[in-house]
Image (cartoon, rainbow, N blue to C red):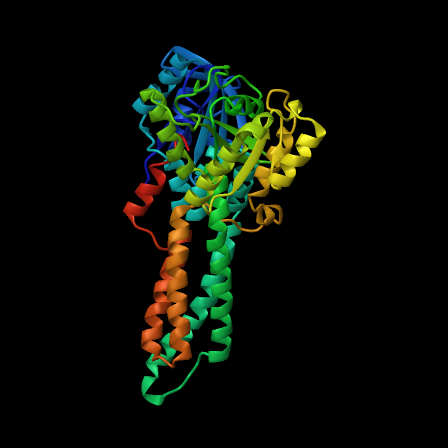
Length: 462
């Protein structure tokens, strides 16, 4: 059921600002707006053209609340597909509250989280995956996540799924037709073409499923643990990466006793750096807790940066190699970046010796900020941005990922049935389930619980 009442909400962030935008949507939105608006040119909002702006005052009976601009968007040519007005008022929280309370008294109700976008979906302005991309776009905090959300909101993912669904639906119709003529043993669906279609669908689904690994990383950011012995410059490196004094730096070993986290965007990709407590044998209870947390953070990280004092390699080289092997053995699948810090103190022959001992080493000076850009480039190399650069569809939504996995499973069943001459009625069941999973992504198949879960995560006003 498409709701018929009019909803109101603040569309801009709460709090004081220069301008605030209050949005109303519903069949009576323009009428309600006109009842509280007095145009400086005595215009009647209900007779004005869509997509027009009007200057005037919001009036509570004879009391003037504010001078405002009112934007009119008549359905179906609006974001929600309904009559919509947006009131741009001054950003005082008092003014915002007074206008919203007035509109509530005039017949509006407060919008639920994401209800404007929900109405856009219900009115056919967006499909479900596009609607979900709106939330991703609002929360995007780097170039890559913004690019993916924009591509999905423009319908890139939806179009790919819709095309596959339509082709599969055509064959499903022919399979269903065969069931009507089961006694005559006829085939309407060309099995060779059907097999080719299933191969193509399987290929696309696998590509989309594989893209989730990249998409999830881009959406949530890549956690990078900076580990090593105490006083090798982990906190200095974090400060150099962030270009600010985020972590306390001291000559006293074991200064960092807890993990410190901060985020940085490199090449459009978000990285979350975790400065951990130095790894060493200690009897200090607090420091021991910090070291235990260090290994927990390594477990959670996707990339590990192992830092050591390159100027001390002659003395502690053997111990260093033991620590490196320990981390490699404990976390064999995690990319490991080995960094020799304080390289500005090394002689040429010492640099040569280090590189021969540890060929994959990256030499830097965190204090002097030398080699920090090389580290950033190496971290970026761990992210497969090829699909992003080629503007391919990348899946970032866990719900979509789950439906794609289920759809692929059903397609494999259909393919197996086709290859083993399974009866049409049994194949039809698997095809229907695959179509159902495609429909779950775009919203052709929905229920109230699904919509409630999705739009509950939206901000109010969107």
